[in-house]
Every structure is written in C-alpha cells, then in structure tokens.
Image (cartoon, rainbow, N blue to C red):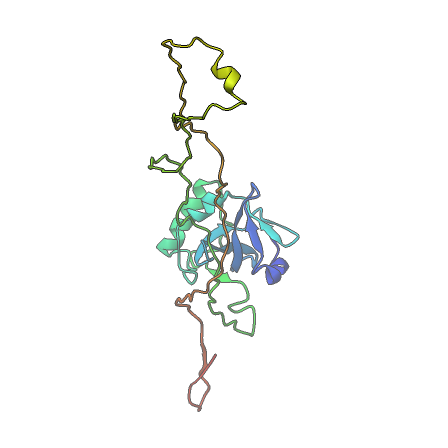
Amino acid sequence: MLRQEDVQNLAGREVYDRNDNKIGRAGQVYLNTDSGQPEWLCVNTGLFGMKESFVPLRDAQIKGDVVYVAYDKEQVKDAPSIEPDASDMGDPQVQELFAYYGALGWQAPPASGAGDRRQAAGRGTRDDAMTRSEERLRVGTAREETGRARLRKYVVTEQVQTTVPVEREEVRVEREPITDRNRDAALSGPEITESEHEVTLHAERPVVEKETVPVERVRLAKETTTDEETVAGEVRKEQIETDLPNKSRKKRR
C-alpha cells in the first residue's frame, strides 16, 4: 500500500496493471478516514480518458513515473462505476465496488464503526484549504480504416488497323528489233517451229503475328494529408462560495 506522502504527486501519472499493460492515468486518490492511508485510486480510462474506474491501492507500487496496481487491466475497466463523491461505505454503489474487488481477493482495512467513510486525499478536516477541481477535455486521435484501394488487371479486346506495303509481280511483254547485237541469238534456233516460254509471277501477302510487350508499371502509393476538425464536449468544474457572517454570499472560482 502506498504511503500518505506518496499521494501528493500521484495525479497524472500513468497507471499500469500487474502484467505491464497500460490502464490509464491516475486521478483522485481517496483515503481511509480511520487510518489516513491511501485506499482507492480513480483511474481515467477510455479513448480520451473520459471514463473513471476505481482500483484499490493495496499492494500498489510506484516505479519512476508509473503507478503499478495489483489487478489486471480488464478487471479495473470492468469494475462497477460509482460517483467520485459517493464516499459513504453504506452507499449501494460503494458496496457494489467493495463486493467486486472482494471477489478478486481484496480485503478492506478494518473500520472503527458503522460511520466509517472514505474521503478524497487533500479534502476534509485534515487540511485548512479546500481543493477546487475541474474537468478538462483531453483530445487525441484514433486511427481507423476508411476504405481500401486495389489494383485489378483485366483483358479487353479491340480492333487495330494498320497499313503495310505489299509487292506483286506483273507480266509485261517487251519487244525488241533485230540488230547486230542480238542477231546471233535470234538465228540460233530452228527457222520455223512452235514453242512456249513460261514466267513464274510472285506476290506478297500480309502476315499477322502477335507479341506481348510490357508498356508501363502501375502501383498504388499512399500519402498523408492533415485536416483540422473541431471537437466539443461538456466538462464539469467545481465552484467554491464563501458564507461569511454579516456579509453577502460570494462565489469564487
């Protein structure tokens, strides 16, 4: 159990469970009015620390700036919720809280009588000053999935036209007169005869072949942009008013 002198710098410290899991941040500490020793710690949990859970300080330890409690994270978060001002042990909310941790092996310190109460550390008759507290918005961010993008490749068919030059051979009749240059060739054959002469013609035709070639690379890339959003919420704060003899009542913050 922590000592009373440890209470002064407890608020705001990170709170971890016995398995080194973070639970939240330490808030108000509540004392046993009989012994004056710290007995309960209010832990701010939840996404923005807006939920308050109570955990016994018995067997709690301070290591550096961290408070380690003797219970698991889920046990603390599942504890019954009570109002921080419901300090009377006869209050049904408080009794439910005692029963919950009692089932986990916790035993309350012995009380001096039925009128035993718990009080917040720094409040009550032990100090001449009164502490005024108020809630503050603690705003953070939570990362969540907003959608998914994917690349999908599929095949489409389209008609493609192109022009290609083709060659073909055509026959042409050429005639030449008999001259001294070709006379010998002209007289080399029989004088009168029948004969044939054949010429083979050729032509080109288009031939289509297909090949697959890479044309580009496509990938998905992520970039982060920053926007601003306005967050609003209700917070409570305590006010203190003075009631002085023969003077009007004054309210102070």
